[in-house]
Image (cartoon, rainbow, N blue to C red; front, side, top):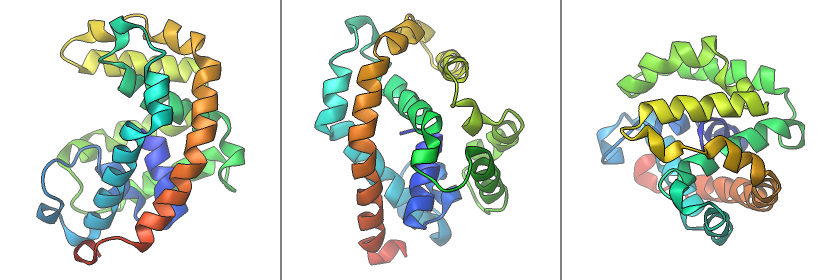
Length: 197
């Protein structure tokens, strides 16, 4: 899952949105981070672990060509965010635009976030990354931007065409898996280890 899904799952489980998205930038032991971030970081890691190990995700990965093996997990994360944004009304009572403002405000108002997140937060808001996921063009722009940030951009060659080809498979996988993840996120929240509360 990528930014939008982590923020949505945080809202769904009534945990800190900023802390959950911080999980993409927070390395090392959770105990090394401020207390107000710990539950969200822990939840983020549970979500990533289940997503990476789930049979639905593994089956979807197997549909990608060998040339995209290294990039496929990232492509799936971004594609799932696209599916969530595309069918947003089915998963949240607010509009995506309203939710995005709420998320951006949560990030801006949270203290002691990882430095990298703080540095890109203005761009996330200015370029309205969360709403951009709704369109195929927005997804393609995100895939291109991510490719530029990795040490070997060529691992993303053909990603946009592949995602278009696998569109139905990705949608089926997302629609099957995401409701489970929503339920798990609420369950994990109730069972967060005491040391992270």
